[in-house]
Length: 406
Image (cartoon, one colour):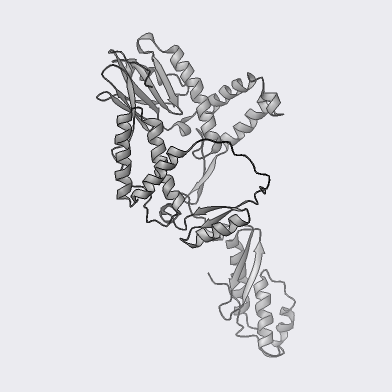
């Protein structure tokens, strides 16, 4: 970016697609992808599927997106699904086609001199006062009319793009700074938090790496380091932790790892919940047996606060093994059903309550022993009652039925 020069009549401008994934036209995207596959001479070397086979599979994946909300099942009828691994690929391929069409057909008075895109974010250098005309042109390229762009012009010679703040200098050259939104609070993982030390040092390393990779001028890099140290000090990071990471980054030299003759193959990896002191001891023990470890926090804000999906009612689950305790004793019944658990539970309750309410006489008691019941709980409860009554010669009136609890 520092080699780019901006003329006096030009401005920095950025465009952003509104809700790209859910507005990506599937039919047009499939046409674009099919054309790319048919022009790929190496496709047959990487898969036995031809272009038509891949498009058929991809069409099925993109048009059968179902989700539930408040007990209702819905199907997404347009666009690609958020969170699907294939959505980013499809959207990006469609955007490649769209940008080629847009730049090639743009009117001369609004044609971008520089066009740089990352997924749905675009940075351009265009003539002054041509932003709206270019935006109208971009919004006309998509044949479905669903892809719409918003724009932002440079303000006082500055414009944000991704994690960078691009600054126009007086001589027309550009420099890069780290961009922070106005809502940024400088709140990072607190050093006193229940996390392993390497994760806390990783926070420092990430911020330092971003500084080294983005900031282009030495004086700005010094200012950025001061900002990082101030913010992390407020989060409880001691000076030694910041100095250690900086020294490690300075001493870091890429070297090819030479495998020693006595190296033994790894026996895999285990993930353990982090408990300060205990997790480190377990890590050392696993290391002696050549087992790698990864640590995860036991509680997170996401697990405590965020529940993006509806909780499924347990009675609506199928193919389950269930345990129904008895109200009158410490016994329980374990069953299995392929149907919804709620349906099977109702059958248990109904059959048990029917038996509990019946009045048995000497004449029908023998006949009742051969009855077929829908609930195994009923059979179990009658056998237990007979055992409690001795030899079963007394009336079964007042049987303690194993009725399931709700």
